[in-house]
Amino acid sequence: CEQARSDMNAAGGGLSGAVSVGLAPGTAAAGLAVPLLRAVRTRHPGVVLYLNETYGTTLSELVMNGRMDLAVLYGGRNAVHGLAFRPLLSERLCLVGPAALEPPPETVPLALIADMDLVLPRPYNVVRKMVDDACAGIGIVPRVVAEIESAGTLASVIAEGLGATILPESMAREVVASSPAWLSRLVEPAIEAPLALCRSDHLPLSEPAQAVHDILIQLV
Image (tube, rainbow, N blue to C red; front, side, top):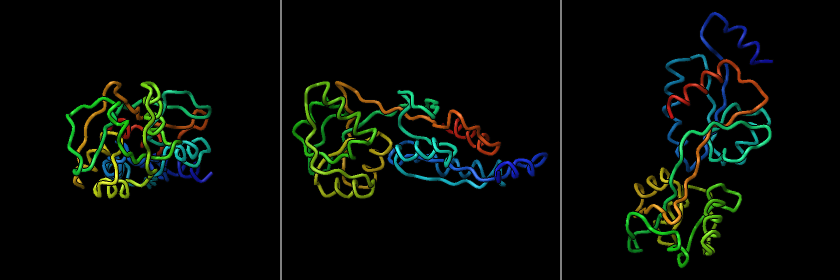
């Protein structure tokens, strides 16, 4: 009701109202936060943007329940009742290791991780599921010594030489830039994580939310 009143009051003038956008952490989506805020402030100064960076499963539930307008997260390959996905891009997964380990070539076969101590997210995480499925496909089981969701803690663990990890390329480059570490793209098989724009398939977007949706597409 509040959004409807805002839309009516804004008719004939500039857009105004609140728009909530989820950006999955540890993905290329995180890099959209500042450009999105800048673009919305420039084009639609009456729109108040709420940015939420939490993990994909929670974001999709918020969108499904109508508590969030849009979310950029990994997924979209499988249909989910209540949600509509628009594919945006795919990110390669990379092996990231501490400087204490000798850096491998630019690309390494997935089988190389069989003898490595790995720090990965929990099994419900999309990236973890992709890693587990790819490992099962070549008959190996990743040796997981710890499960960590926090990007900051993960970078510290890598810097201390307590294990290696597998990350989307955007996050892998951030870790390497901020700590003594290396990255190598995984091949045989290559693993790609699809990034998608998620919205409700039954709840219409408000006028401000549609404007933010269009800006997101342009930025990607």
